[in-house]
Amino acid sequence: MESYAGRTEHGTGLMTPPTHQIPSIEAISVTKIYGQGQTEVIALNDVTLRVAPGEVVALLGPSGAGKSTLLTAMALINPPTSGRIIISGELVMEGADAKIDLRAFRRRHLGFVFQKANLIPFLTALENVQVALEINDTPAHIARKRAMYLLDHLGIADRADNLPDALSGGQQQRVAVARALANKPSLILADEPTAALDSHRGRQVMELFAQVAHESNSGVIVVTHDTRALDVFDRIVEMEDGRLLTPSVSSAEYGD
Image (cartoon, rainbow, N blue to C red):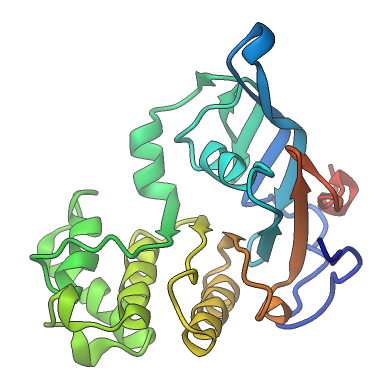
């Protein structure tokens, strides 16, 4: 595949994190092995990746490279076989051993956006965002105010009362982004979020991630095959055969 190594300063351009800044996430020496013996498959092989608050990282690579496996490990959905996952300075996974209540931690600290918006079909756009807050015990009137603020911020407040099937693909993804941002996560993870969109709508979504990251100081990692909007990202990381081809941010840049 075409190499993007060295394209580290472009687009919205937060590149070198301030020293002593605690990363949004650190995946350290993460390995994931499926099966054993002759059926053993090494999906991730000693991967280390750090992402700073406010940094938007594109994760590229061919099918089977390990991108989604890494993303789900960092999302605390698919535990690694070995290695550590540290989010906002807190050790949350060591190998397959959870150090915290994963479900509660995900709700409070992580936001997810996937290829399909996966909106609840019988809830309006506003309600789809509001429910993400209410399951975290946010009072209904505060949840509604926060949800409306996010929809307005993302330019879709005029569709707040529409059900998902009345929204375009790009509008649905904006609602999905609003939902991911509802609880002010320190880390946002997106898996092929523009795969079903045309180039214009796809770029809008990518620019939205950059805007959100820089304004809310959230780390963002986007798995993508779409190379049309790579200038939007602060950093591009490539994977192949379960390994990183381009270096992660060095520990020295964080003052470790």
